[in-house]
Length: 87
Image (cartoon, rainbow, N blue to C red; front, side, top):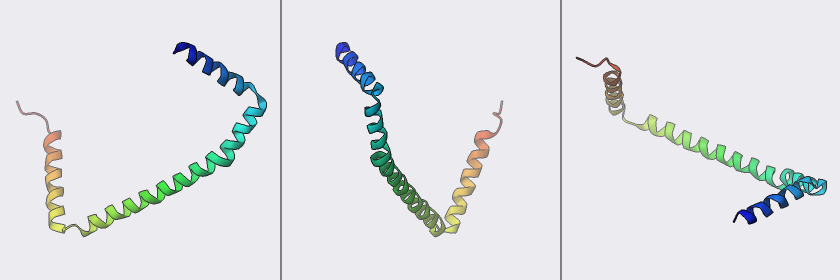
């Protein structure tokens, strides 16, 4: 396994030192990879915005008194966890 890893490493170094191979790789990254990455990032942002909007809508639709009770409960729990221990 070490021999194979060594041979692959040497082949990669040889290709990386070749200016024509570097130019071809840079062109491939610029023309193929970068546009696809930008499109995937845009789609990810769009999906994140949809999820964020859904969360906001569901929070607004929640029953006020239930949300208030949950908020009070969480506030009391927070205070209880942060208070000094009794001796």
